[in-house]
Length: 433
Length: 120
Image (cartoon, rainbow over all chains, first blue to last red; front, side, top):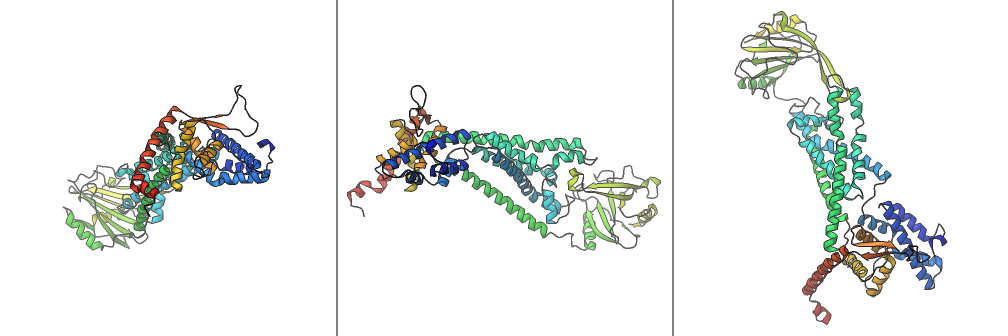
């Protein structure tokens, strides 16, 4: 009996059709295996017929004794490398997109939370806002680079490890790597868009190298997957030469999968802990402002001057001693006005290493008196939300300021309230020793 | 027993191919016959091993042809496998491993006592 004698619905044809669908090996190898198994089943059938069975019974018995189609497919698939056809490549790209988003966010989040707590990031400390900032869209990763390349390295290692694992099971590493790596391009469609939509101060030219660096993850994934395929091939050959027993690759893959799972669980754990920490963070310090003032005064080498005059509804909300720039050398008094605006008063001694200007919008040299004509300025200040590269959220406010230098201290008063120059000068004149 | 059989199937296939070139169906028949039915595998079990060995260049396979290069028989096609020099080397190493292992297990279990019926 040959394949040509059989009908389309024979048990052998059905078995082979199901097996063909489940095999993940290379097309040429799949065709060879199916042809061999057809020959095997036909010889078994012929033997059964010779023993007295009918053709139909013989075929059914041949299929039954050959082995369950699912376990046959599984054992063949686990013993041979996986062929990445176009369907698998599409799934690989989806996997790559998911992987980069998950790895990026999980690796960045634990670093973003303390940065936000310590006011190194100008973002809300709500867990949702921090999660967004940690994601590729929020791009908090770039802020973490200020403290070292650790997050970027972690992302590189984890992304490369997955590509390596996929390659080690693939018949051609580059196909697996290409599909997985393309996930970075497909998963972040806003990257090229940002070139067009970037706001002027950021600029397309400054974004281009960043985008190119991110897209380099695609060739990196191809390289990692190729390396995985090569290492697996060498390891298998070495093992075969020594043992000649075909232990399926699944064992080594499962060890790798276990290690990846441990890393993923660890990342989830750290991120979960950070999430809880962010959720329980208090929005503002609860230390009384009088205590803040006393504490600040103890750390400063000069007397803090407070204004005797302030617009109605203005209260002192916080006192901050600058630690980062000059080591407890300057102070800022933060006032809130009842309509939601603020007034900030800076006091910086001459002998500090603080830059000469006070605030971003006050050019040196400073006037010797708040009454000097050039002491007052009014500028439009623009600040960007982390979604800066989409050109999305930007905050614009009119900032009025007055700055002067009395020979001992440099002073600056900045407000976003619609206060006149005369009012600011009145506040400045009311500063008491 | 299942794991032991699974682990030894590769060695048995290489050994049978070392004796003479063979194809899948024939290998399963020879295994059944030589073990007198004590070693039973699903027929399908030989194919993953044959193809893994071929990929690792321990064996080489070719479809059965006559001298002129056309198929010799009508009906089921047979793909014959034979051991490569690399396969011979692998078989030798694996056989040595197996001999060491089985002899060590035998020494621990005191096989001669068991077969003599003195151990309960």
